[in-house]
Amino acid sequence: MSHTTFTFDDLKRILLEGSGVPEGADLDADIHDTQFADIGYDSLALLETVGRVEREYGIDLESVLGDATTPRAFVDVVRAQLPVQAA
Amino acid sequence: MNASAVVTGLGVTAPNGLGVRDYWNATLAGKSGIGPLTHFDAASYPARLAGEINGFTAEEHLPSRLMPQTDRVTRLSLVAADWALADARVRPAELPAFDLGVITASSAGGFEFSQRELKNLWSRGGQYVSAYQSFAWFYAVNTGQISIRNGMRGPSGVVVTDQAGGLDAVAQARRQIRKGTSLMLAGGVDALLCSWGWVGLHAGGRLSTADEPTHAYLPFDDRADGHVPGEGGALLTLEAADAARARGARVYGEIAGYAATFDGRETGLRRAVELALADAKTPPGDVDVVFADAAAEADLDGVEAYTLVTVFGPHGVPVTAPKTMTGRLYAGAAALDLSTAFLALEDGLIPPTVHVEPADRHGLDLVVSQPRAARLRTALILARGHDGFNSAMVVRS
Image (cartoon, rainbow over all chains, first blue to last red; front, side, top):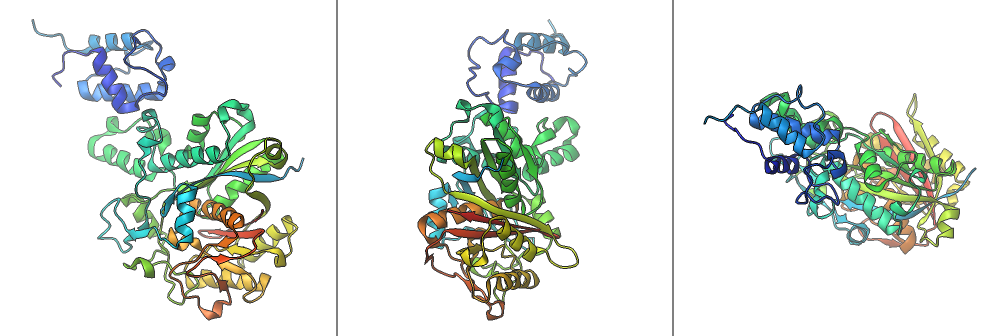
């Protein structure tokens, strides 16, 4: 895969595709530091999201995801796995 | 404790009607939901007719969070549950969570979902399989999703007894009410009309290969030659009679008697009927109408007709099979028949069996073509599952 960036909007898109919007949740609000569980995404939703990101970006997240329980932490972990962009 | 269990709400998803009103109006009008399969191309299969639910858009009823994780059968179940609760004017969120339970019947789980994910597995690899496959396929998934969506955390479970399941689930709910749970959702919905499910149904045999909907599912008729599969079913709200009365609920009627037997050296259907009548303390003469299992196979129709003639006498009780308008719904069938029975009791109308010319040799008073007006207080519902399950339930208004 040739992706070299991963943004909060990418995460949001993949969450929507794979797991929909939790009832009562507002993904357009500032949820960067909200726990996934508090947004309404359970462990299975995260598993589904990880699988989709891995497929789309050709990376392995399982061993590095650790405590990424918020969108900001998740995006940071994914970015660290992406190939460094050529200057 | 031996609280009487009453039904206070109905939620119906049927091939000939979505929602109780639509379904009941269609059923009284003799409107059939059986037609050529459209969910997938069935041209190359021996059986090509089905009772499909068309015009059901899950997104109109359920939040998007549930879409990626649910099979069609679960979506239909969730909507039927919502309707059964609304019909009973119950808001689960306002009640103690552990005092509300869910028992459903299922014969197959989420087949269409599984077909898609297995296809992903074998064509693209394991990383393309949805994480939700872990539960979306599962027999108990409808109970689980209904429980989660409505915060119903009391006694819950699933029964898998093929077509007998709709009654067995309601009987299990009655047990929980007798043990002290105040409200239960119970019943069954099945939806197997994808190509993988269709192959499975063929392997079970007994499918009609007719191409003309009016000639395809003809129980108790000399032309009987198998059944048409359908999708859908019903969920019912059950409550302890005292509690229902105390809150001023509209009561459709009581689950008065039930029995389940299994075929051994001889068929167990008659024993199921007699035990259910005994459980209801109802003599055969008090039964006003029978909703038949109606297998539409010569031997099975013979057993059912013989049972009814033995218990009630020749032409001794009106018998009907409105499932001739929906096809056989497997775990959904008897739950729908049960709902239909309550609607019949309420209106004093026996819905018809359509397209059937009853064979004289069966000795049944089959209600055909038109609804029949009658004073109805007690109904008997029969259901049989593949390979020997028999269940019978007596309900009273």
